[in-house]
Image 1: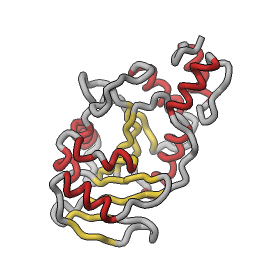
Image 2: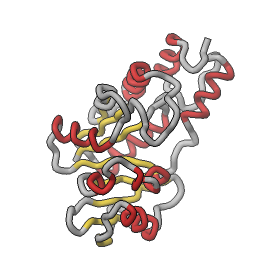
Image 3: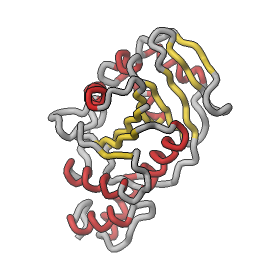
Image 4: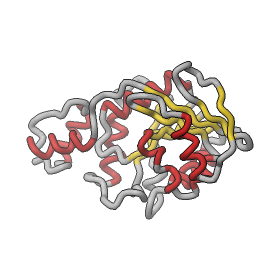
Length: 224
């Protein structure tokens, strides 16, 4: 299995790295790719740092881990325009032809999955690891999203862990599984606020040291 974990990583922080590590421990993928996006098509604002800086910060963050299977790729930064996950999946499958490809997404993002570009085709092509901070999504929540995407038929199967839920499509045999974990209380917006408020003189909690040094050197996020 290969796992794709995309996001703005603006900047990458310990919450991202902890989740990537937990997914590796749980699913044992051959590769987990962290993929900084160029432009989220569902957001009407740009990241606080440009693509090159976010890529470099992601590389520095992953460098603090002893996880050779976690790699950073610039697939979405190489393409102009919005970063569509469908295109990224095609790139991943071409570069690493693994029959099992899974996406890591948050539960809030999953609820809006029907708004994604080519959502039905995407859901029939990849497995989904839906991460929840508090509790597994209810079956009705998953069925509702699946139905909105036009992929209504499926069966429930026992998941890897008893407390989790796994939905398996009848035809494509792709699956959706909830993955509940104790998320670190860190957010990119909070880190950016601390950086901007204290002008880089205070290292925000959860920001890896090499990333902090890079931000100060490049004077990102209003750091002076």
